[in-house]
Length: 256
Length: 324
Image 1 (tube, rainbow over the protein chains, first blue to last red):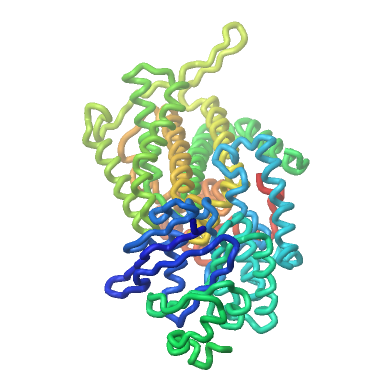
Image 2 (cartoon, chains in turn cyan, orange):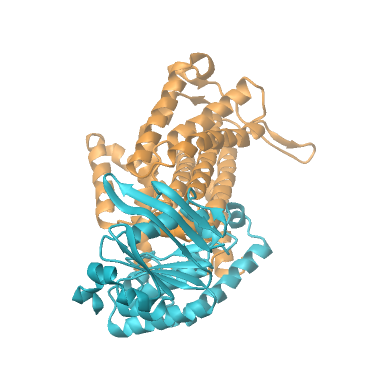
């Protein structure tokens, strides 16, 4: 049984086929990369899996259960957590406040818990402060703990976005262009970080433009073009696939 | 309550509330303070749903539902006020649940418009169902709350416009303040703020937007119903004109002027917007102009309300740091 299985997935916006009868699977513990030129449907695919968009056809099966019709919060509860491409965060809050909200699934955060916080509610929620600090250490963000998020440099915003996704204790982590807009040093740090997250046993689905990062991180790669899967295989196979070279790699500026 | 500053502040506020009737003895001013208190409960209930970024324009309608429910339960069903008070809150909350479930799927202006329509429908029902609600004449002769008696020890009765009403209202305010403050400081409240700021991200972290919105709406309307019940028995007369969208607008202005970020903003808003008309009454023909200018100035220069500005100027930090 595949960990995550996408069956015949399709999404059209009016006449435009953003995703066209797409099928693939993600195995537990691997890093699967999804690449493709702009407008290939990568972000749409993410939005479909995370429940932010409803597919026009097809099914999404996670750990043997059909999650196609579920709402985003329910999908997160099952263990599929994503980051957002624009690294949008809760900008008016501090780093720590952002991260504490991200521990929502672990917190005792019901209405009655808030009005009548019993000892056990207080204990569980106080424990989250420590967990949040540990996580900030892991991502190298502990020094900007009390910084308002809108003042953070781009690289730190990306890291915080990933920290927040990790706080929701995902089994499948979906990263939307994690090194987009980063300078070479930030890119290197982020690549190392994703490697570290993988060592913790997380399965990762990654959408990325940067070929070097994808090639070095991923076990397998899927190539999308105009909503269709044009290739699938190991990084070495993808590099030499004529179809891929024609659609994508041949264009020099993507090779970076 | 481990923080000494917090205990000190709470006791100080409580003492001030208890002493106020000795300081302000003029019944006209006491009446004003009671109005202030009712506005506070209603605007702070409205603020709850605003904390997920939704604006309801039906708060006055739920206030009216509470007021009419209580009057009918006491006068037609013969219930005691002390039973009808919580029941009016529950009836308002129940109707809010029925309305909120389909309507909170709508966002922003759509939710605003549909709650405004609901407010108008409620007013029309009060006006046209004459047998039950008394039509445009409303319901008069609503009895005062039954005296509370513990035989041989003490007895509290509620003479018309008596100071006893003041103390009852303060009790209701303390309960609602307690609930609102706890929500604000809790993980539940922080999740609501997250929904307002970026709903897609909040959902992707497992926060159930619909569930949070409905709880806030229902709790806010529960307190509106309680305020309505108190109002009906304090005024002894209610009519459909009291619960129109002008009142809903007033509660919205109180919340926005004071600042929706914190319950303390609502206190400031309720005090100012109750006192302001008293001052402008002197200059009758300029009343609306002064009022409008005041609202405009606050909105232009203090986008997060008066509380937001004070917080910035004095760098006010919350009394306790961690979430509940």
